[in-house]
Image (cartoon, rainbow, N blue to C red):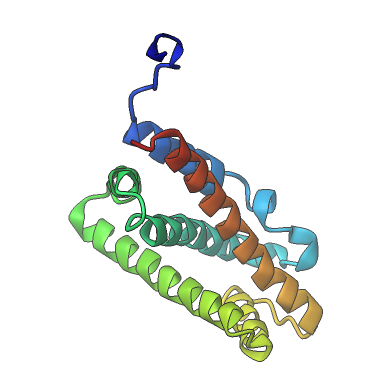
Length: 170
């Protein structure tokens, strides 16, 4: 019966980490976050792009950390992903690491507000995020949509991780 068993491909944590990096971090900002939701002034676009980059890294790391207890192979992917992300000289790398960790803490706050269905804090989170890059968004619907676009990205990353772990159950 085992003659026709499909041969399982070897596990490649670096390859999976590179896929997560290219699909969820290095894509343009408008790939996952809908720019039509929020108007970013041209003089603030650099700051917006810098911040979205940090948060995309944080979203992927948060998802990997959330799933590595359930699936030990995810730990290998997280370590490979971290090597891709935090490959700067120590002096520059530590400052960058702290920025990514702060983005991760902030994103975790958003996940808690969503879990608790605390709509006021969801809107407040989005407004604060946007004010940090010079956008004063007063529309509650726009702020909410902005926050939910981040959680949508998180869900896509979680689904990708689920697909990876489904291929390598042992």
